[in-house]
Image (cartoon, rainbow, N blue to C red; front, side, top):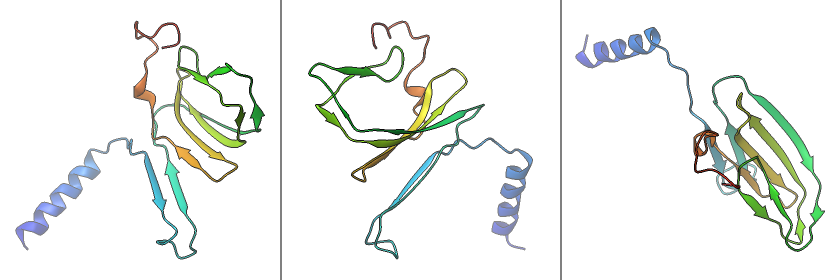
Length: 133
């Protein structure tokens, strides 16, 4: 038996004896020239830990007045709105503490945006996050 084979077996056994929770959020994009159908393909998964709630929503197109802003979450940035926003499908993963962990947005023009676990981008107990961040 070769030394390489013995080492490979030892590594495999170690992985089996000491399993770890996976936190391997992944996004895959296949371009139209790489797919057999000629279409763009997007795959996205979230490996967030803990108990999670996944919400889905269809958000209609909307007209906004000058100066209108939205706040996505308490104590987060205030986002100025353009005169018209496109309709979009929204999927949201919310964790036990109420923070949005990972969202996906797909608008009526075919633009898709997904995030891979933004939980660590903000903590609720950070003292410098006041008055909207």
